[in-house]
Amino acid sequence: QQQVKQSPQSLIVQKGGISIINCAYENTAFDYFPWYQQFPGKGPALLIAIRPDVSEKKEGRFTISFNKSAKQFSLHIMDSQPGDSATYFCAAGKAAGNKLTFGGGTRVLVKP
Amino acid sequence: NAGVTQTPKFQVLKTGQSMTLQCAQDMNHNSMYWYRQDPGMGLRLIYYSASEGTTDKGEVPNGYNVSRLNKREFSLRLESAAPSQTSVYFCASSEEILRTDTQYFGPGTRLTVL
Image (cartoon, rainbow over all chains, first blue to last red):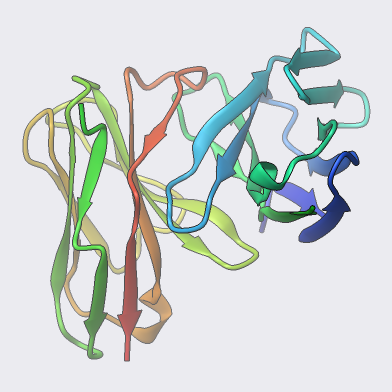
């Protein structure tokens, strides 16, 4: 049973376009939502994270939007570049400990 | 500063064989984790260690054992490998067992069980 559902599984976008990845969660105890980026053959690395007390967080070309009432959050990659081609994982964590629950991942391919 | 290192990078086992995956971190982190990554399933936590001397089960612990050898090292053992354990295994570490602490991942071990 996956507590964090991520969509789409894969995404192709042209260079300069916007990539949008969506995640939905069920457990209202989750209160920390990071996104990890993984390049082929590498381990995941933290990209950006948000707490539910804000509705949006932006770091460079990457923006997280958070909708607490809908229990959804999304990652927007603006002006997508070929170097952004990677697999992206959303995750959720709750107050007790650092046991993150990960979504299934989205493979993003940015075509030049 | 190597971060999190894992050995081996690749391994092929036959059903019933045993092996130990090694993980070490040089960031002086207290907490360490073992995940498995399967297509469409994301990363699933197998075991974690909040601090030296403690270990706890994660989401999918069956068929695995762990040892927190010291603050730096956290190993994962498969006593009797099964084809269902074919996966990519990642070790990670964080400063503390807080959800807001960044987890730093190793490069992974790709395991195939025939």
